Structures are given as C-alpha cells and as structure tokens.
Image (cartoon, one colour):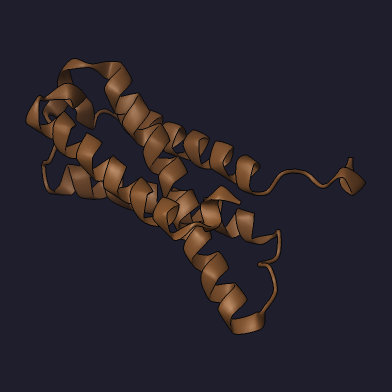
Length: 132
C-alpha cells in the first residue's frame, strides 16, 4: 500500500509545507478562494495518510498485525478536533484578515479538511467485498 511507504509519510507534510509557504508568500489564501479550499482538502488528506502510515508502522512493530479497521473513525475524529483547534488558533493569534474570520469560512475550512480526510480514509480502508 502506498500509505505504508516512509517516503509518502514524510513527503505529504513536506509538500503541504511548501504549498503553505507559497500561499503565505504570495497572499494566495486571501486572493484565490480555490487555493484555500485546495489547501484544506490536501491538508486533511495528507494528515490522514501520514498519521495512518505512522500508526501502521508502530502497530505492526508492536503487535505484528494490521491495525483494526475501526481506527478510521478515530482518525477522522482526531482530524476534526485538530481542524477545530487550528481554526481557533488562527482567530486567537489573528493570523488571518478580518473577512476570513467569519463563521462560514471557518466551517468551510473544517468541511474541506474533513472531505480530504474522508477521501484518504476511503483509499486506505476500502470496503471489504464480504461486507457488500
């Protein structure tokens, strides 16, 4: 599986950091709506891929087995809590201009992060044929 490779686990956050710095440098978050949406979508996806890959390696090292499938619900909940904490931090530290501190922008950011995470979870944990 692609998400089990250490290069993928490390490359996701690195790619995200480069895109984040580019967005801040050229004010793309304030001038380009799709860039903000894309960053939250990719952020949610990369978060899940990196966390799942890391947990998979730790789980296999400790128990010798694959992680249980229920872990996907825990991963999505963890991302939701991280997204909420990040949005609160952005407002608290005044990291964004006033127009982006609206409730609709905050909910949109959290929604797109969850959407990216859901896509990543569906790729990592496809439905079993026996459950269909």
